[in-house]
Length: 67
Image 1 (spheres, rainbow, N blue to C red):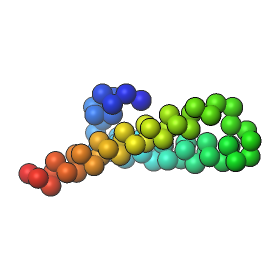
Image 2 (image 1 turned 30 degrees about the vertical axis):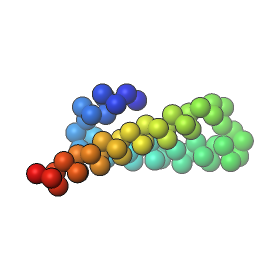
Image 3 (image 1 turned 180 degrees about the vertical axis):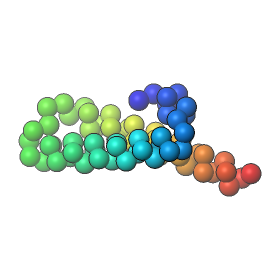
Image 4 (image 1 turned 90 degrees about the vertical axis):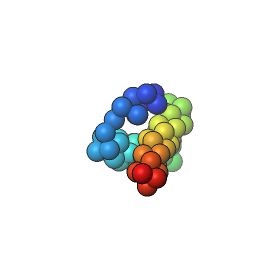
């Protein structure tokens, strides 16, 4: 997911995306543990997308506090 797309999301959409990415990351870790992960790069991509979403959420929270 591109950072531009993430920055265009609302607070609710960011929270929803965060939940979905956490769930997807959990499922990917389970697949890796039992040896069924076909695309290992998905693990890194999902982790990076989650980090981007969390970063934008924290930036917005920090901007609210400074106002």
